[in-house]
Length: 102
Image (tube, rainbow, N blue to C red; front, side):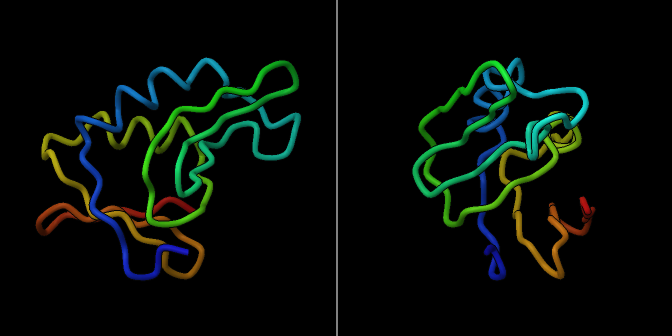
């Protein structure tokens, strides 16, 4: 769990997520099929037809709603984003701005 947080480079992560997006379901027919799944050495998506992974070094294992996560990262202008999990909410922090995904 990301209690302490991790700094991610948005310019590195957004293209990876963009390549994985075709594997996200619009509706969750299969559990977590709408999520990006972060592992310590990769990010994965899967649905009832395909599974896609991409190498990525993460400090924790967690899942997050894919489209929401992608759109937030895509809309941020800063290069580095602090991401943490507190009370089962994913929190983004950039300078004095923050938001949560439930």
